[in-house]
Image 1 (cartoon, rainbow, N blue to C red):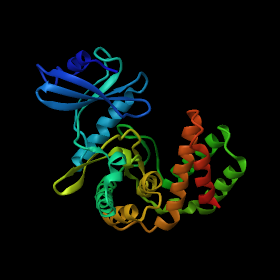
Image 2: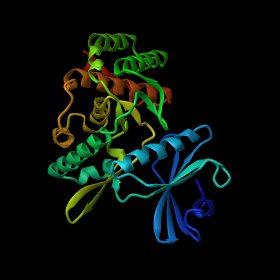
Image 3: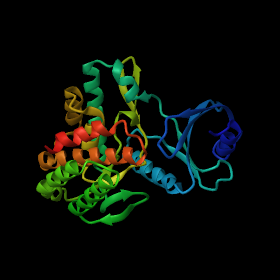
Image 4: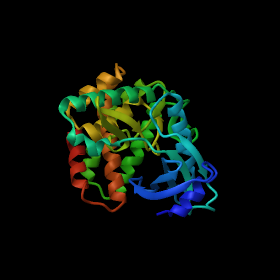
Length: 307
């Protein structure tokens, strides 16, 4: 938690004479604290995101990626400033504008099927705009591509190898692992169908999409949390949205794909591989954090994908 005095000091260089009324914790990532700062003078709301020691690079990453998305006209927070000195707050931090809206994960239950379709159509348009931002190589994005890989085939084989190793090391079912390895080996030629990397949000799911309701109904007001951004095949991003948020819901998938536009010709072969990758990655993550509850469900997802 940060105090109102710390928030005031953090904002002083950006808003001289600022009067902080309240600091409200907001939902953040696993490694970062996110706080909404409500100010009386000037009357405004801002976000301060705090990064613990050793993760200062995430501050630079988010500023970089949000800058790329803002230049492309996407509805993202404006980064007003960053500070890695740790003299004001116990951590590096970023100050951003606070976007209007509620996470779609919270508001979605109140929507009709038609409204859900319309929101997902807009999400397809936004994700398509993200994917028009070409990258020079495949790999993890910080302020550029870290450890760039020349081809998608090489990149995805490396990533699957890593996830298979983690699955085994974390006690995953050996028979299920063999099934997944065989599934990928029989189909991984599909990776070569992506010739160029694009910017991928890599967490484009309902928890990171903000929506608001007005006279015209529900509308998308922003997308947030770019900590996981990659330079990769756009289908990898679409598959994560499908696996995390849509899970076969017809109105959602139909809307997203209508908004997104024509899919690459590699769609039929690559998409099942990418959905499997995200299932493995999520199983590995939960297992590594000592959270066993989701593991049987995720193992069943993997089993159904590879049978």
